[in-house]
Image (cartoon, rainbow, N blue to C red):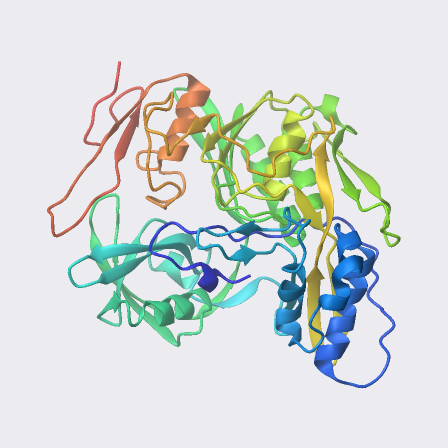
Length: 478
């Protein structure tokens, strides 16, 4: 799936990554006949749907209705849309469009996450800058380490208002969004506005190599002597497990007592990476415990019908007594398994944010070269369950503190959450991080809006925990 499919003037639905257990592979279906690319790829798709798709019984019943004359890029979605029992495979948008988790894509041109570009990831929401003239803005979601954007001082939460000196409008926003997201522009000349203080600045970015790491930020926050580890993790990618562990070990060396795991932008990924993360956080008593199990269709002859996944090497890094997780509607799949897997072991997990996506199923992912195209195919093949056999989070996991609800127990909210407001770690302006810290420390939090002139628009709310912070415009609630 592609971000560009989801562009909207309101907060859109989420990009969902796949869950990837170890998979021995069935990548050699018996392809017979000519060299027609579409037909050969369709044979590959059918081979796995008929043998492994969780709802393979209905596939067998209705496969004669599948359009074998379709282009391979359209065949999977067209075929799955003819089924009625596979409701857990994806979701329906507000406009009634069916979006499937199962996917097949051409990855021939992809390399490891080393990217030549600008180092910016954009949020799905398009901000309205000037309603009268229909001028818009792009909100920066990610700024990657060692990138051109980071070197130029661009921060998460900044709003891109102009590109090449020209306002972003209805006629050009799609083109500009594409060029930034895909690093396809030759050069980026941008005007940006910082939400936290209203500062407007210009940058010119040239392409350079950077790593698209999911371990986006980590630090230790000290609140009146309490050491709180804070980790922003945006995808479960096995290639970065060593970097993930190194970040946790670095925080351990600084005497972390509590931990905030920020998964608000994490749509999932490798189940093995999720096990690595959970094992690094919990005490030794959980070592070897069944963290989750998966169940496949009983007629799946390619894989065992059920599998258990256990924590390993627990207690060798952190030995937390509890975990605080920042989540949102973008949190899905392996992110939800972290929450539900630990809760299934009666390990305390507190959720701050908004309701998660609700993806309680996963894929066995295969790669195959057909007629010169390297394909990655990930049909839904199993459902997930915690250690107690519970798997009922298909509608999403509700947070303990819902930041979209003005009446939540913390007394702070943001109706546009999780729209980025500030850089990672800035708990004066990041309502989720401020609420998580206040929840951990059992302190009150106050919130006040700082508004510039009408022509400048709204500035993000400033927050204070326990006492006034230097530079904030509000006072503490006693």
